[in-house]
Image (cartoon, rainbow, N blue to C red; front, side):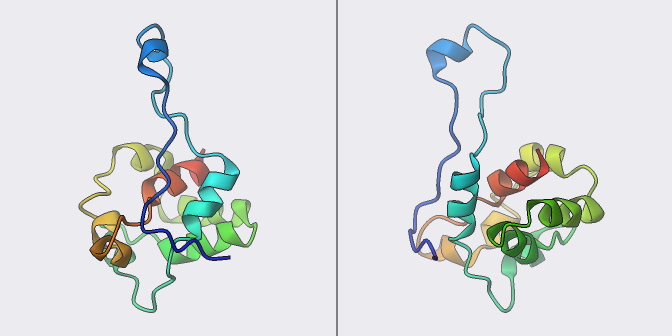
Length: 123
């Protein structure tokens, strides 16, 4: 079922009082349910502006479709075939100006959180 929310699912992060005492990742990552819920926000546009905004043309709609259909392995293979460094890119790429910046949902609300979905799949 589509998630018609205009607000994205925020990435869970460590509490500041906990993270100031360790060297673990601040971002905890999506759970499977959160990743699928965020993926359900994707409109599967006929002309995917998110993919055009990506400098390496990651097949974002196909990747999201595979995840939603339960094909985590297929989505991961798709990402790896396009970019073997997808886990690193999910953390350091400037998504706000590229794929997420071109997302149609961003015109009325918050864009699909592609970076967090990509991080979940790649991890």
